Image (tube, rainbow over all chains, first blue to last red; front, top):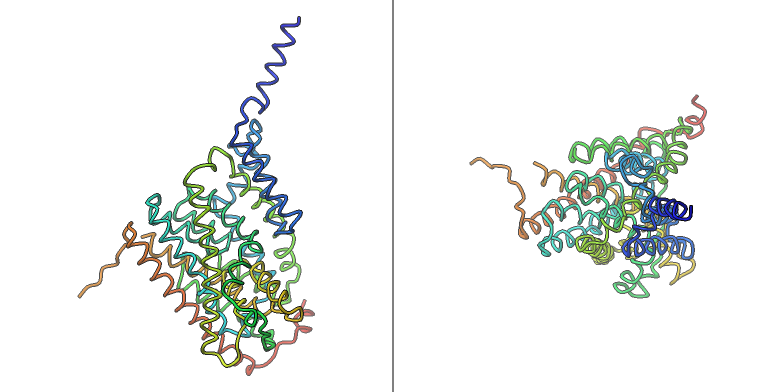
Length: 376
Length: 58
């Protein structure tokens, strides 16, 4: 009787994950907990970090098979892997975004390209390690574009086997931008530069806002067909927003659909952080290179703005250069907050939104060129 | 002279070439888009669209 009881307990024990939990799982559960802590206590992008952190924790509890084929998170990740989720995110971003700040001051668009030097620094460094092919290096570099859907899209075309690591690096660093960017911004600017108050931008008419998505969709798709699915959806969402006629569709894309896709995406990204796949030398290299790409992009954006100031009569606040890295609107918000600390009456957010929005196109263009050159 | 399309070599030199070409072309394309946006105020000469009329359009 007693032996049968013990036998049943052993059988039950074998069904649990207790027998197979590893040190790696425990480390990753702590990492997931840290992401949740940063979202809760520091308010660093809770929309991204809570889902990523939670699914990272539960995916590292062995036995549940949530990420195995047929498991709950497996299908969430399939949506990312099959590149269904990224274009839908772009539809929502387009429907949420007012491109007015970019249309009103197009001269600042160049900062959207300047802030992408980090991509290229990471590509060269990745190749220098001798661990990655040129296609893998390109996929790693695109982390520096600070654009999650674009990073997923480019990685699926260039190095699909690196998708978990690259998606985690891109989304985690995007969420941690309030922590990563300010030291670089302060290091490269003086107090006087950070205090520069910029002139109000001109108002943009409804006609300009309606023509914009059509013009951009035609130009970018014509020049860079590889990124057409993303830019098309971004501009479709924006067109729905700006025509004002289909408020219901625009609201659905910007709110309900975006929320659903965000839940699926963050859960999918966090679920890839399983210890056996994640705690490897190559992953650590990718995470390190991703950070360098973010730091490099922030630095090159600020330096780009300072170079522009050499030729401008009316100086711009160089902090807005860092927003050119993309990651709308996180990077613009970081520039705004850093400027507010120097001058509590300096509202930089709308000025930073111009380069920030241009950064989305900068990443798309960089990714498109990379795909065109590497996939032949 | 015929120019044959080249693939990027899988070397460090290839990575440097890819980076330079990509960075340069990104700047050129973004600058091109900004030039087009500079022309956008001219659209307002065609007329105006009232937000109220659009909203009440259906």
